[in-house]
Length: 274
Image (cartoon, rainbow, N blue to C red; front, side, top):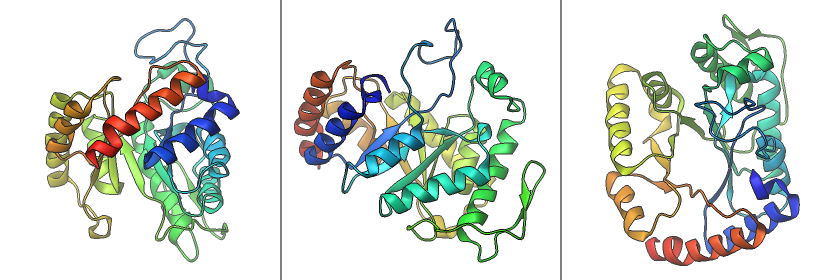
């Protein structure tokens, strides 16, 4: 997004991040934005936002080791059968480096423009996740739900990662926290202070009591985007809470500024806290 909507800039920043020791590169998604901007829209309608899947497919060929993460895909706006193919293709092209971050969305004007059901987005998100997992993991994929159903079909290649790429569930609502416990290898919180993160972790603990978490998922990994400008002391506060990963949000608006940010953060955060 922003300056990284330019391919040369995104490639340079991605390679610099790998060299600086960052473990992952993250994208965002909004297909359209309200014009004029109205709450809770996060950015103005002229913000440059590439499609996250196209961006990660491009970065797969520009990088070697970094995890390529969607942060997040707005799942109920997508066709899950097509999306399963898109995501599997990225995992193959990147040789198993995809992380599938997913959320239910929150901008009603965006849903309306796409023609997607806003009120039923939560239930649709759950069904779409189940359908995608069936396509990725079942020998003869089939699914029968209220919003998606299929049988007598198959799709290859499957993802490189087995049993499938990690699913990271975004959102802080009670349904989102329950979804994270039910489906997620990880949970992702965007622009969360340490205090808010502590509340989120308490909510995740309550969600764990309310749903059955598959044992194969193991421990829920915690990823947070803090406010821009975080230093090593601030990062340590998140680590002490039990956060596993911070996804940094730069304020730089050009290539040189982004490269300087990556270099400085690599020195002050990545290497210092390793």
